[in-house]
Length: 457
Image (cartoon, rainbow, N blue to C red; front, side, top):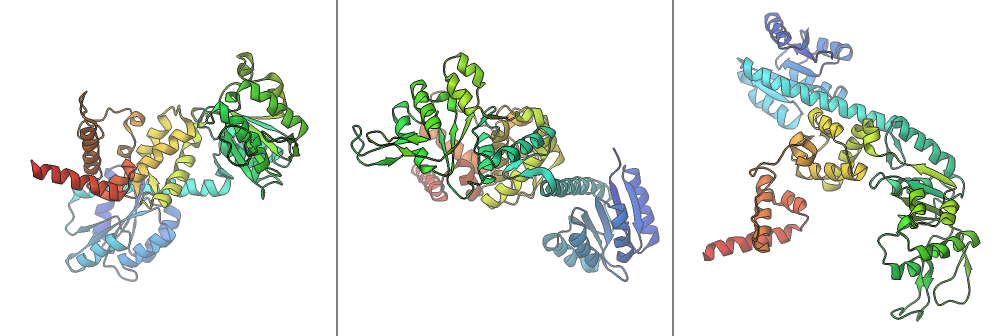
């Protein structure tokens, strides 16, 4: 692995040479520049991860250099060195202009070594972040699908090939691999893109209601049918219908579905006439469809009717090289949604994500990233923002976990969880409410009740 690069900028030769030797002894590759103009010339070729610059210099001072670096090389961290007369300006450069840190001369070299290490790590994370965003722009995204691995590229190619047709598609893969996302992508790339996309989860609808959900019913068709209901096939007319978890559909209803697929017509429950529907059917299952046929949960004739084209999604553990792209995309999206400052994933946190086996696949990764984004109060997600089951570390009673004795009243359990979450978010009530998934008003009311109860005792 190549050494991390540090550029030292100072108009005093002895100062820049001495600092260069010291930084080199700490394991970095160092170069020097006598002023800001010379520094900018070297940055383009040297590409330092950290720039250590004096503030007062001829031709271009440290503040001007900082501004230029932020505009043209935003991945580089900048450490400012200042004399007594420019301390206030150096403080503002950190707060407002993006400098990583400032040191007042004479410099505490031990502290500089620690800050330099942090600045290099931070700069490396930003550089990786920019690389990932560039990869996403160039070839890492296909519709809503993210990934540049060979297995994902093959899926992109297959989607492109099938999207323009009206052929039925069976999408298989473990839970959380993105089967509905594939179905939506097929629809968006098809000639039906401006028509409806309807999805129904066959495992989530009670058996007694499934036929009505699919085909609709007339008023009075059965007890409780107070109004006419339009079914999924009618709603998806001229568009696409996703039958998710098709192997969970009631077995007897599968025969009726097969007839609709073959005749391209449906009849609402209680109706006397059939109506023609033009629907592209996409189906998905997290089971092996042929095993489902063997186990008599999926009709063989229905499988062959749906299985014109099969797209099999790999589990995330089989294309873990896509985790960095996925994670960065999710950080970008979720930080905007939750209005949080998170923008980067630290190298240690990313390594942790890469080493995890992801039994819940992309859905689990998204949940982990969302949790981290919500509780993170800085620009960079760290390993400590990841849940214990991802890091492999047991939570301590003072960090992520609280002890709940058996038999404790539920009101007291709730109180302890709320107070512990509040402490973990540094008493930021807005963030605590987000983590607890309750409204800020509810949190305030709970805390007020706890205070009143304490005052009574």
